[in-house]
Image: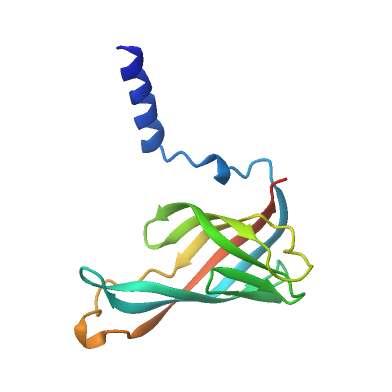
Length: 161
């Protein structure tokens, strides 16, 4: 096998294995906060080339390890704690999981006030349950209709530097 073919094979194997972006590597990051999110993924019936349910926004309450409500997760995507600190995420990687919404790694910026989230620069969503868009019921007669779908997930907020 020529060196070029070997490199192409390694590249294709890496893609097939689901290698993450270097920005998604959290192995050396410091965990700032872990929270459980419970709420809904809100889908809206929209037409692109076909009619389909599209994610409009999440609405969830964040709970700490003692099951105390500590904040909210909402459109943006954003997370805001009761201390006023907030982060907004931008997708880095998405890993599909059958029967549930994807696991995510997001870069984060803190536009809010000082607090627990003010120095967070990565957010991960794992251990998801539910939240998948309906597969039927979206057509011209239901244009702009919304449907909330229950979900739960673990959110981990990191500082990578």
